[in-house]
Length: 133
Image 1 (cartoon, rainbow, N blue to C red):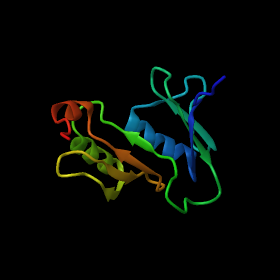
Image 2 (tube, helix red, strand yellow):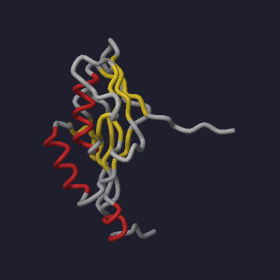
Image 3 (cartoon, rainbow, N blue to C red):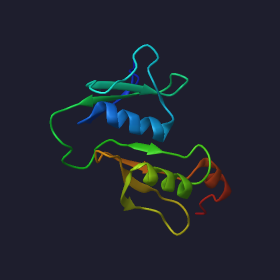
């Protein structure tokens, strides 16, 4: 017997606002039979095909320290730099630049409530410039 991940939960101060922000980042949608509205304390978003959902749950305390689990995002089109620009324009903030001279690495960002996530190279970039070694 094994378990599987049902969804990923993200604690936050405002479930609706943060779920709306992440919908823009991931091109996710509300659960068809349970749309999110302002004031909802739990907001569920998912891929349009019903794939891996995120559940935003309001908690009374602010985020205090670094996440122990975080999302690693890979651009589905374009480059890491283009996606980085898009995410910054949406309101993400840069936390740490872990890019290497050879193009590998990642950039650590934070969402509007300070939850860290990383942006990696796109698969096209990985294929075009494999790491030698």
